[in-house]
Amino acid sequence: MQRNQQVPEGSSATPRYVGVLLLLMLIGLPLLVVSGLFVKAGPARVVDGPQPGGVLAGRVVDAEGRPIVGVNLMLWLAEPADDGGFSASTAPKAAPLMSDEQGRFALTAPAHTGHYQVVAEGDLWVGARKSITLIDSDGGAHDPGEIELVLEPACLLRLELVDSDGERVGRGEFELRGNLEGGPLFGLLGGKQSIRGTILDGMLERGGLPTMEATISIEMDDGKTAEITLPLAPGIVRDRIEL
Image (cartoon, rainbow, N blue to C red; front, side):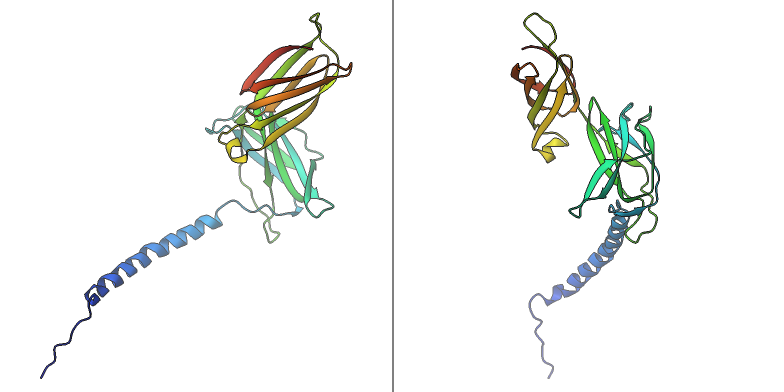
């Protein structure tokens, strides 16, 4: 007598599960391979070691990718420090230059132990720095490709300091403090800004300042002091202060 075998509940769906699993494997495996390729093609880790030297070329752009003309470019050398880390110092044989009409630049880097840093600065742009290596983790040659520095608009502050007769005061010192406002860059970094500088012939001038509400403490050589608050916005901010 033939027995009727009971099929466990849900077992009829097993072929569908197997089919779905195979489909996921067929789709997922190529994705993993492609993902691996993207990881390998990503930016190289900065390697400290005997750099061979060479030409570091790239361009300076704003957040929309438009070229920035006339920005100062400098090459710095990151060197071993006493605490085991690295400190930056201006590189010898690397004169500062300015970005051209396409925002491009080319800096000649000397042979050096450590790594390189390309620095961009401008009165109307917040400075940016990028670390560069010309060797890979195995000590072989590495091509960094085109170096791109993205800059944020900055404030150029010009304050004329005068006495009660409207004449410019002499020499002094200032400290500028403020909290960085939110934005594409500073919203992520946050924190406080503190800058010190010298006042010459009654003029306080400082460029490359980020957008913020600034408090400026002034102390002149003749003993006069002042503290003012100014909103710093992108562009040139001018004011006349009587001490």
